[in-house]
View 1 (spheres, rainbow, N blue to C red):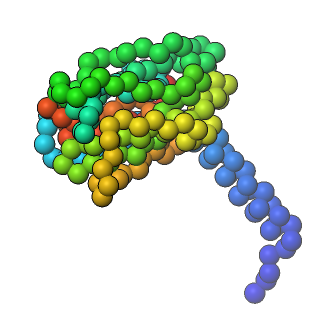
View 2: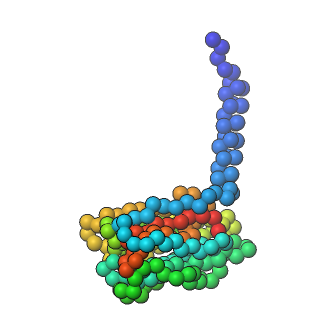
View 3: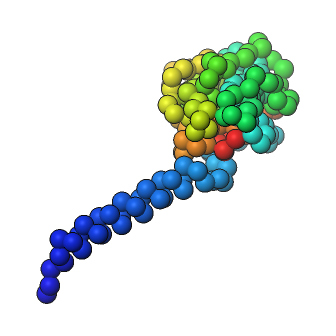
Length: 193
């Protein structure tokens, strides 16, 4: 049995490093398919899906809340040609009912939604939004949980579900779930802008 030479080992290590770098570069620049988190909450309500649209990122939620989250809508920012974020806009209608007080929660300027914690069993009771810094040169989120915003009222003992975009190249771009007089369940959509 012959042992591989030191030269062969060095060449193999260089090739493995090059393949790993190539894969990382492809993952960072590839147009990956949109990712949908599971929806968290109960089985009732009518299906909804709210998207910022191509070239935009999710930066906030709006709607109605009290003891539960009664309705949800989205606010988005367009990604400009230079990669920076444009002004925040309300996109589409809200899904859900008319009870509760109006709410609006969004990330600070220069941040986008990158993760969330949903407390829900039969209905959504609260959503904690995690904002991350937006890198306009790379068009991606560079850090997570720089700012946390709470919508609704978390109840002790309520099931908590945490979700975030799997790839840094894909910030949140929308929400989906089920709602009627309340938001029964909610999940998040991640995609390249």
